[in-house]
Image (cartoon, rainbow, N blue to C red; front, side, top):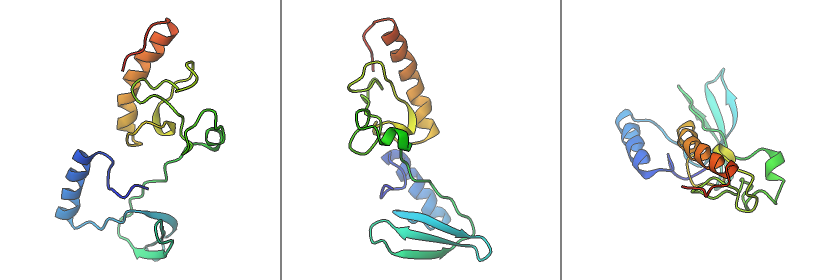
Length: 140
């Protein structure tokens, strides 16, 4: 859980404006533990202090923790120190195994873990996977 509302500053700045205009309560670095729908309360653990906090809500919007599947995370030959598929951020090709490419939330590339990011990665993957299959050099 990043201590920011969004990983790209341009979008984060725009989102903070909306938050301020609409008087939205944002709680960064909180992990949802339980939702109590009858009392409209959400129970969180603060990731820095480990404190358990219960907050009332009218509308609840939660971003799930971003991590790779256990089968990938447990394979240290394929992952970086954080358990993400270790790929070149320009080509999406694995840093050690040239026949492996990655896309999306499981990769080590420094982007947000969103559908928009995956859409942008798809064109790169398509070009570079095709080039690799043809024995050609990869492009960014």
